[in-house]
Length: 601
Image (tube, rainbow, N blue to C red; front, side):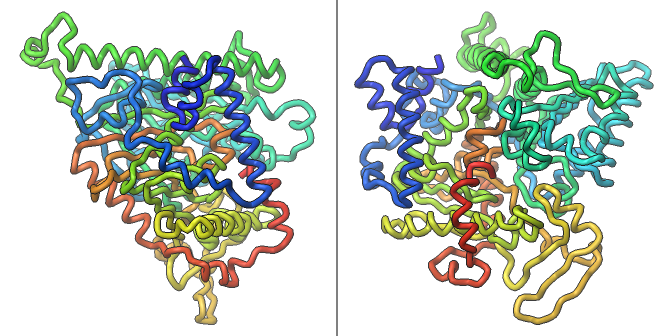
């Protein structure tokens, strides 16, 4: 099945090669390895092969659908129906989908949803911060759990939290210590799972210090679920993401099938994770291979099976539900169901969960993303945002070799999440500048400046700098004071956090996404939203999940368009003069080290 899926949804060039040769599974793996090897060689030579210019001739106008399209489904989604050959397809009404605009709206919505939850709260994140806002979130969970026990008819409310082990264990006060009171007070209702990458083991685990060990691999999924309502985002459970760190968020209301899927997905990853105990120790689920003490291959096989069982069973359920609801295949006719009040309105929006867990050999998100980039027709526009510009070689090749127009939004160094950090981390924005410059030069060398445009998120005339700035820890640095430097004004000052305009302090480092506008359309019909960021570690090292939203609803398309416009509003087009600015001068040692470390951030 995996081979068929890869052949069905992989890049067109590989599909054609595979169609000519026998032994597809082995050849698919071989061609993939050869592609990676060639990509690394091209990086070392700092140029790309001329075959990229032929890519538009190899790609058809629309994706090939391996199974016959549903004759009763709307025509507009046929070009994306191939995704349901890989993952479950959830048809919903666009009235159940809402795009959130700000960190504050995200935070307040989460608190409100926790307070009214009756059956389940499921939260998957990289980590939970340790500040007062995070404590406020934990207090909401505690109060809701307490009410569930004191109610006249006690509910069976369950709380499941999935975090990364290394990030969640960093420091003396950490995610674990924040959640211990919940575990101790409600041991039958609360589960805290800490995912530990199987790649951090043995001598490597002993030698790599705290913080640096997070570069080996992480649990990076961001899902926040309350009964049948879900928030998909790239935001972590941290004060900066609740106040000044811009991200993307979509709220799916009253979507029980989608909620069930993500509950099962988080449970599956939780089952292959370490379980936090009330005494701050961790244990493996009974019968499960230990992630870093047990056999790595056996652990990864078990994890692959556990996660793929969730995906495949949900896919089978949705196929049956689709047939029963919209095709009249069930014992009840559509008219009978409608008369009984059971028939759902025909959907105008389709949700596809895309999972990427390369350590477990699950590459669904990668396959879908590459196919979307490959097969976007001439005249289509793709808006792609990434806080950290470090695209994989495959994604870079597809951007440069296909026919759609691209506008890629990335963070300028001043609004990068690592800007001003101490030590090696402080050089990371310069490394991103170096990668950006290399890519821009290749765009120019291929004469693609009109088709592929880079834009940098910035705020004219202002920059900011915070002391003790660390990745994913910005909010704690900003709470007490922000040092604002008026560019060109020659004056510095320290202002209390309450007196600083929030728009001046917004960072852009966690905002990733993709919007697809078909040729001739002024509104997007598809977006990708979730935790992946199109970089190497996101594709190869971490656990990621996002959703593809395909919609025919003009109202929802308008929401997505406005979201995209707001992000691009404060951006400037990158040109050769951009890299002549003093802030874009990259030190020689950073240039030399970047190729060695770019796969770790």
